[in-house]
Image 1 (cartoon, rainbow, N blue to C red):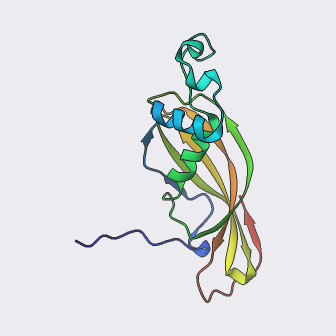
Image 2: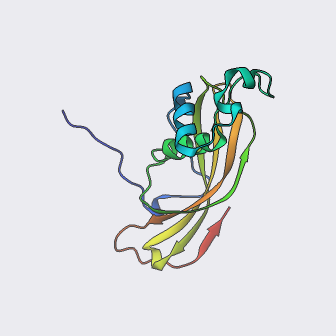
Image 3: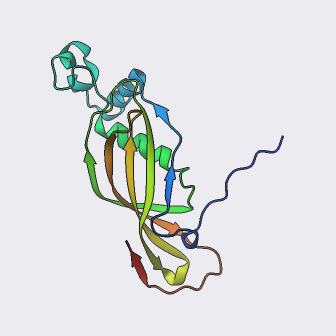
Length: 162
């Protein structure tokens, strides 16, 4: 059997306002518990069903950073880009809770492109939104990554922004 993967996109393959949608993933109690152990954040809002029942959401919710981490993973394939480095989180907002059993997906847009090193690489500014199964935006923000350009490219160092 031959298995084919989509080729990695180079910096020059991206254009402003392109949009990709990731596969969906359902958030489980086990993931929340594992993240609590990994991060050391055992806030009752996340891990204590009795305490969370009287809290603002009436049930335990996923850690905000768990949602961001899962979104990072989902976003690696939508789009599949030849990323050299994650540079920064420009802004990030936690708009709605992610509940146990929520199924999330990530929408990603190219917000700005800045060519570097005569086109051998470039900085991509991404706008990402995490949506739940009800279509609600639960988190969103802007990030920047360094993306490899195509070999032999001799572009300028100009910048384009959206």
